[in-house]
Image 1: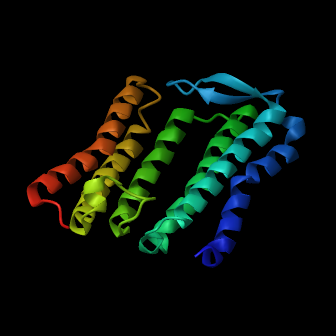
Image 2: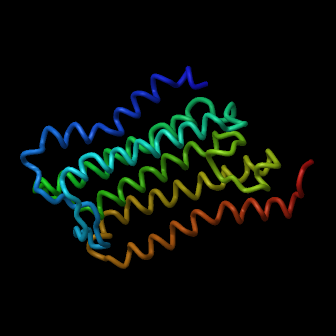
Length: 218
């Protein structure tokens, strides 16, 4: 499987560290301190030295990318996530690296960007994306709702991930809509954290209820 995906692994790894090249090109225009952390209002409240920021964040994302990729390739049930589901693993870190570093660079260069809106939009799109692909994942230990009741029962797994897919798409749509209001109403950030927690726990509860109702299949 690693041979099949090696070109994609190399490409996504290069994209993950692409912000380093941009930082080097723009070195002379970047301030000595680059914004790297933001509060609920989207205002920068944490900074990194330019040299550290340019290399540290992309390098950290690359390590996470490689770790997640190798862990997924070592999955005993990796054949169940071959194809499009595995591409989710390959593209999470590259896209996050471009989004996070891109926002920080834009602000450092004086571009007016509403960080809260951008982050909400990014998260909302990711929820919708995951919601569409989760039901297509077979049983595995890398992607999905990996509770024992679903891993031990294929019917439970399918039902749980169909349910999770609907929940994630709904939360994604809500997030995209909230993106245009979150900056003006900071309390929405707290409300969204609660919503995300519910979205994450609801499929696990559904899976357990399914297990209780239908029993475990040996």
